[in-house]
Length: 552
Image (cartoon, rainbow, N blue to C red; front, side, top):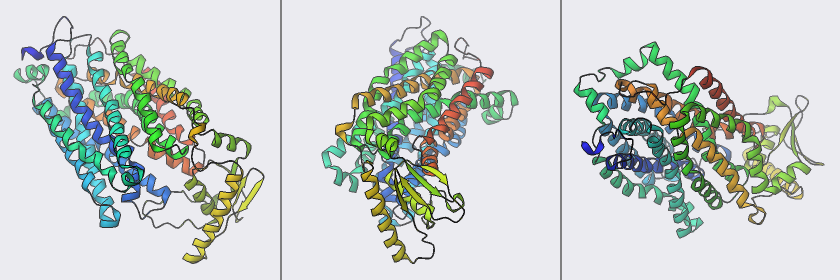
């Protein structure tokens, strides 16, 4: 155990390097598995939710993605309890095996055309297993590394774990891009998208081997040898108000804001480029990868800085900056990514004039709803084309109209039409709408010749910078909030509720809000509100922890 003991001089000796490398590499692979689904959500929607309309396909694919996040707190409870009772090492060895096997099975799971409803059902089941595993992963890795780190170095040491989430995304993007370029877009869309999932089996083998080389945390070993480890970590962590109150404050005043800033800066930004701005998927992935490459060193920088000025100030500053600048940054992405949309929206804005009572929420999770009112027909057609629009209230019972600049197109009521007549009317309306949009300058997809990729990378890198501010110090801050005997359990729950529920649902909630309002920026209100709430709660109710002794 000499090689993993804490060096009182604070240097990064061989044992410390091995602990950080082993924990971080395993987490890289685990996040690679998890990010694959997020990056391929649109394709997965087409293969596993074929029975739904196009808008619902994408949103429901995001919901399946979010399902994995929804169960993460339960994984935190299950594996956190094990980690506080039997140790850190073996617990997060189990989580990586579950994660890897679930991801591999996604790669061999038949689609909707083969299995019907069973296909999305099994897909969601695998996503739930992935989420449970990830719920136990982060707390174990963060606690393990922090308990090896010398006093005054925990922010720096745990920041290497924070890098791994971005490295996982970066690696998944590279594998996806390599496979897509190697096979061609048509083959990749047909079956090649499965290859990155299958490759995860190789990564799983490497990850398990690396983690088998680890020893247990010296802090946990000492505590267990003295008989001070918890016999009932769930009761101590959540059954006593003193600790439960701290868990709630850690969630609302730290991890909720950290989570929405993280997922907005990476996942939501990627979906915004491809779904709202219609930028080619390969180009969008490359832009995100470039921004991540620029921003990644700042995880370590802010982790190191938090050892000197504190965790709290850096995390909360990141939340506030993000909330204040999201609207101008995303409008900048539109300006430099698809200026034709911006110009067309300014010169020929699209407005839907309709009776609000006749407008449904544009989301059909089971593929059974019929959007047949004149308002639904108009909004559904615009949503499929990714066209931003505003809403104007019409008289009750009026037929909806779409105004594009000085052009007006009347929708139609389809409730009394049979299937063929409705399809014919919809096609005619769609043709007329497409012609009017083209005349007004609305593009079907982004024009690469008009994209300013340098400015796009700069704006995306700023979003990633916010991610590094909130995420770099968060592990050390959470570890230091809770006592050793219930640390794994206590810190895991607020982290995974924050990241699983508040953060994991950012893309889903964001695009549901966009589909509802027609404003491509409307979805940003969700992360902004959460980030602002976290700033004030953390500022008022959470303390700085950088100088605490975590042995007790």
